[in-house]
Length: 367
Ligand SMILES: *Cc1c(COP(=O)(O)O)cnc(C)c1O
Image (tube, rainbow, N blue to C red; front, side):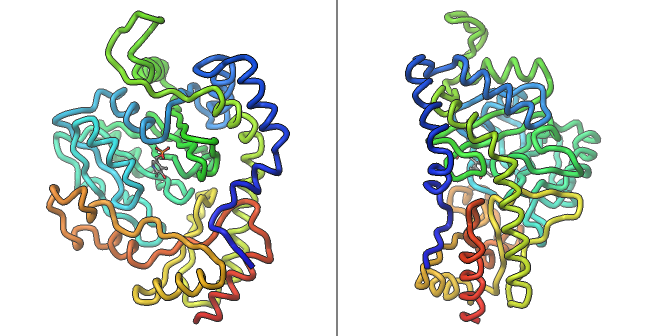
């Protein structure tokens, strides 16, 4: 049996006709940049997030970068984010000229530890970027409380968590601005790069839209200098089709996670912890094994046709890219521990019961 890590083709074939028709309409109307498909998707995605505004951008990294610029963050400022994330989160901070301040994670959920945030605050701190990693919302209420006390802005990195719920509230409506990625492998994936910023505030939305489109308010009327980062019409049309199926796909991901939980309960793996106040959308299903076993387990599964991943093999502060910050591994004990022990099992909506049984049997055989 073959169990890929994700299966994008399988998803495409299930909705091929609708997607192909959507692509044709964009081409026939030559609505490549801006236009009705982008406008309609923005409206629908804002509604999906329970937010007033959605601004389509070129990718998730730009969504973060433009959000930070929108809040006026730059040189001399500090922004706090999780030590365990994809580099895009911290990269966007540095791109603005601000300094990245890493914060350790909760060892159970691998999400930013709100109790650690306050220790990192200085007079230069302007914002916090909690990351809803693996599809599970960060514990937002304590973060919102800290942000209020110290007058900090909150940007949600929801690149892996489209549609997840925190205490019944949709991610994307929990901070000042929220950022999404539509990279093909994400829960809502385009056929190329894509991203979005979501927010409630009219002035922030206007500014974000302006920055992402050359700072323009009209064709050749530029209020400020911005960048070129737009969601294109083809991607928007494809995303509109897929958005309709997203709630169903999220349910399937959750079902698959529960199925894995049952199948793997008696193994030596540490299983994912979903907080009782959350409804996670399982972008990834991440287990933990003791350090010296991870590599052989991964190799054993690979031999049996099962592809796994590691998200992420090095905690951000330990990457060579951040050598200049002079951190040591003991500064972020939980993120460092996680990076050495975590393993992501195959996870996608269409994963079959047989495939999951095969994965769990293989893991048991290994042990
Ligand atoms: C994918 C991802 C991003 C960046 O999105 P791109 O569209 O690839 O630029 C940012 N943050 C997290 C947590 C991600 O997983």
